[in-house]
Length: 427
Image (tube, rainbow, N blue to C red; front, side):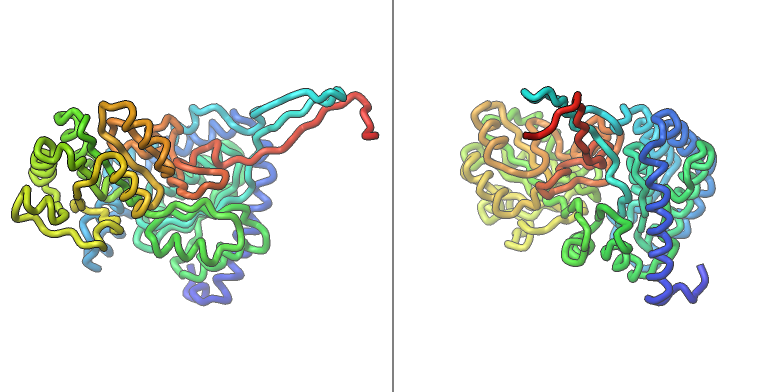
């Protein structure tokens, strides 16, 4: 893109044109057959595999730039693509292709006493703007999910993954062309200028129907503060795991380590461990030693320092921190009541887990905590649309309107009413 585009006025004009083209592409896409969309998705997956070398070469450029800037290891992990991750990306698109096409599904239907038959039917949202940061795989996930739901999409990836996302996007366009669908159905903002984000948040003169942000707290806060269109908010993943006195210790130890350490840089990674004070003697030492043995730094409350000397003290700031790294904060709580109080005070309403064998404890956890995802005896790392059988996700919505939890194909639709009559008139 010429340097001339890299100023606010020209970026705004470019973005308005992208919006115009997306809106035009959304119309034929909304009525495209399930078979044509399926063909496009399969062609996209094949193109990603066939061009894996080009994608890895582009990713190497992004990684080199990131390493020169001295970013954290967890950031590098989120940015890094490998042969395996590229295969997973392609498999994710195939999984989305295999899902039932939601467009036209009758969600509910009923008859009125006057003989009218009413149906509530799924329809595409229209044009979706997706603003994300370092994860280049979001390019594939978001493009595929929006297409499956009959939506056009404008993708604005992070500057750190600019080259990787561009290489992946080229494969998505190849799939659209192969199936005879509008190439403008999936567009990528071709500049890193932050003015492009501002333009998207303005709605591009009515072209964008919904914004989906996926990234850190500062990005999401900006989107929520400035957006003039509806937002599916994906806040930080300040996730908790509570181990109750009734927990099976072997299970708890395995789940806690996985919840924190499987991948520390994802939003479903546990950031705070809460342990029932009533079983501290049985649970605390082995749980903390398990984390330490897995290479995790543990920051603990004063009580836990007494049980296991030498650990770093947790500050109040730790309870509010999404580390996205091999660090976890831990404290003792007064049973399920204490766990609920702590979580409801500090949580970002993303994902929480309880490890317990007492069904009354589990019932209270599920009833009294209002996060988007709640798990029992399972790792918080399952907070993922693919693991939910949704084929993939754009993000985890932590708000309470329309979409909540993993934002998959169904969450990317709205609905309309079809009313069938036989000549009725209203008295």
